[in-house]
Image 1: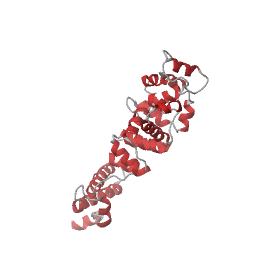
Image 2 (image 1 turned 180 degrees about the horizontal axis):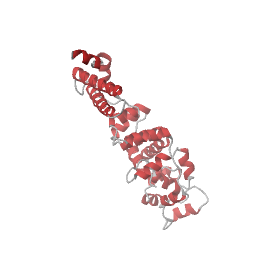
Image 3 (image 1 turned 45 degrees about the vertical axis):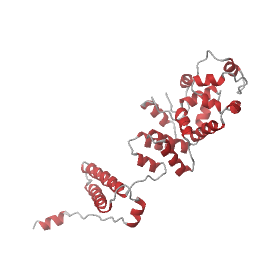
Image 4 (image 1 turned 30 degrees about the vertical axis):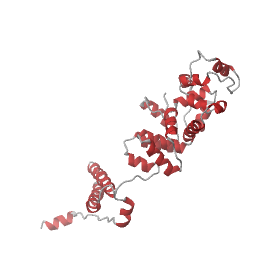
Length: 280
């Protein structure tokens, strides 16, 4: 199986960490022996420093020469660069950005929110705005670059890969990820992760009108759903009337418009009795 965080798994193996204990602590599914082997780095040839580390019973890198070069070959150099053994060798700002990406991934709420935004193709600026609004957390472009590389790499994931991942995470995270995998609009996703999108009154009325119309059409094909169909028709027509009456384009502030000008005028539909009377 492939995971969006496959490089992170590879790093954990190279760090001689307890992979499944770490994944479980992050509310992520454990991996089996076959998956572990698929994520492991080749046994040879190894630089002397790396070979010494793997042969040692300890978890500390004592010989650093060539170690980060080896890690770079396997795509895990940035995660290794922020380990305590290499703290003095890394750029302070780069270190902060990498650690910030790790912290985003470690928080299930921020992790799923970021995954949804990235799946929907939000720009770095848009992601940063959402995170600042929802979490009071500024996210740099470098942090997002690291996050995409190590924790949110969705390229080449198959339907089976996604299903395996979804089956192994808690229901609240699963529901959130579905927002990114299903054909929702960016505005709906932005609202769902906790930041109100900038939509005009006209946009809202148009959305209600169209959505209600298609629900009306769906109800027509269901037995004994005449009342529900009529309610959706009423909602669609009311939204259309208000769109015509109050729609002003994209510059209208929706919240202000709702407070000051919104009138919901429910259309009156003739009953069968009314139609019977009018025909006499």
